[in-house]
Length: 359
Ligand code: UD1
Image 1 (tube, rainbow, N blue to C red):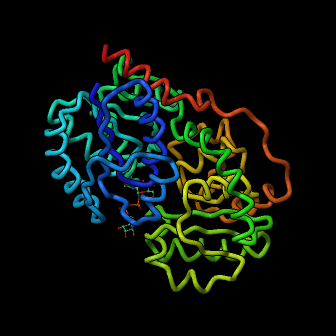
Image 2 (image 1 turned 30 degrees about the vertical axis):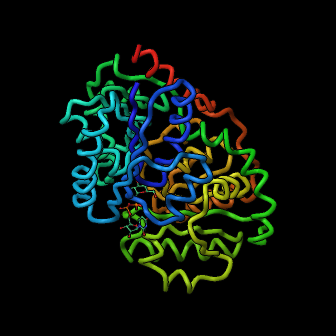
């Protein structure tokens, strides 16, 4: 089968890597298209190297822009590529602008679309990713879900049952595969960063980092928590660009770093006392690793990380944040099995389904 994968932003890379490998081992003909939504070496190239993904066959180099500009650029540059390559199916990943842009192009050309990480819903349409998820799932022909809540959401939206495949979490496939390497690298990282006990922070969502009235109080709380436990804060370029001066003024226990590579960040998550984040994927990775996760959002499209994981939604309740932080600092870690099908084999299941369909 001729399969074309579309990736563009950091969280796509760890999802596409295991699917690409599982399809390669079954002899499918594959093309990898990188839209260039993320273009900094630390947001893109380092992931291709660490995850051993082949160089993209096509790079669209779209770069940044407003949502409309970025989505439109991807669409107009992707259309000729997909017309020239004539894939039998296009696989799109997650919920970023590259995902929905490629899905729209394919839907209009009548090319089959497979959506990996389908069915997740925050039910919050102020989140750009929620719009991307809703539209992509309406357009997709094959919907690969990571957990049963995804199937339920899709059924509620009227998606035909035959199109939905509960396969598990492909990002956990990558985690399972690379955890030994991350473990091996940790002592060096620990020495380089002089790490003792620490917490780990990431923040990049527009709803958290765009406005002064939201971000500065958040930074103040983090600054104060870091006096109890040093906090490592690898900063997304979006956050850094906007708040360089304010970040510099924080106390030295709130340590601002450049974005980390995949293995480094995995090792940092595993060994952290607590993770404070607004990312989606990190809620899942911490659940698998058993690290307490405090999510600075009002909702999550990954509720299973709360019911069967280590995640706690904090919103902007700083008292709750302090409570969760102290519980992680002083209490035992939750011991529980990861959610069903988060077993390192989701991509194998996707490859099996695609192979069966191509016969
Ligand atoms: C995107 C995804 C988000 C995902 C995040 C992971 C969408 C709508 N958002 O958000 O779901 O959680 O990736 O990182 O697709 N920038 C750089 N260098 C880069 C990329 C971006 O400096 O390589 C800066 C630019 O100023 C850019 C801003 O970050 O305007 C935002 O980038 P963009 O790709 O639009 O969204 P992210 O916030 O990265």
